[in-house]
Length: 145
Image 1 (spheres, rainbow, N blue to C red):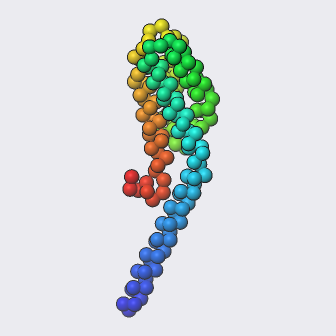
Image 2: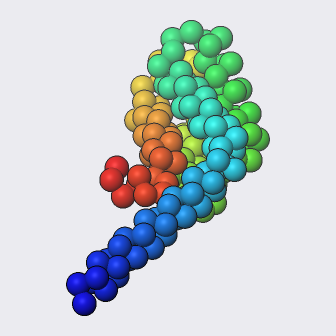
């Protein structure tokens, strides 16, 4: 009877270990396939955050104009292309970009720095941070992070 219990416990541990290994493999494989997309998404998010911060803080009209152009280019093209519709944190980035864009509409560089854009720029940065952090919540490691 004691041998049966040892065999049963050993078998259960082996099955659980193999199951967890397969689960971890599937999770990390899914991430490695998405890695180029996630890298581009992260790069563009950081770039959008930088331009929003520059629009809120610069006192140089030429820098402001260039960042405004870059912000709209990212907003209307590349950043919209890599939006992850399944990710709540990425939709938060999109929402903050829309809010910032609405505030930016119709403004020009006459009153620099634009302190009224500081909080919305920070909101984009925090949304990007949440989006980037969410990419680390993968597999078994996410249970411990």
